Length: 173
Image 1 (cartoon, rainbow, N blue to C red):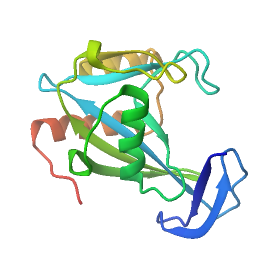
Image 2: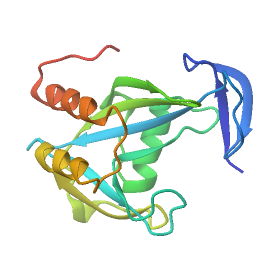
Image 3: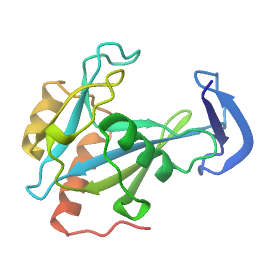
């Protein structure tokens, strides 16, 4: 049974937990993490969700997942990278750069830089069918054609990631 911390709107744990898929009441939130993985060529690592996934089977997306009870969003991000792609990293390797608050989910977005060879990734078969590197322009094209999971702020987030890759902006800690 997977448990999630119940948080306030600022992401602070309230001391309560709920089981995965529980109903969250008004004012209750739980944390999730998404990581934008970029290589030295300025490409983005995306993954295709396994056909067996309950949500969005077969859809291309970024690495993301819900944060388990007792974890910070950074710890959840690191766990998801290891579980889904076999990428092992440390807390200082993932750079927080944005928070998006939804109805009951607080998404913390991270940036990870690394040249990960596709053939060395260890894909979690229950979650990931395949992975590939794409350019920011290919990502924009996939977003236009809805060939990748798109959320309302994704275009803005992609531009922010591009600025971060170029070193134009420094995110807040």
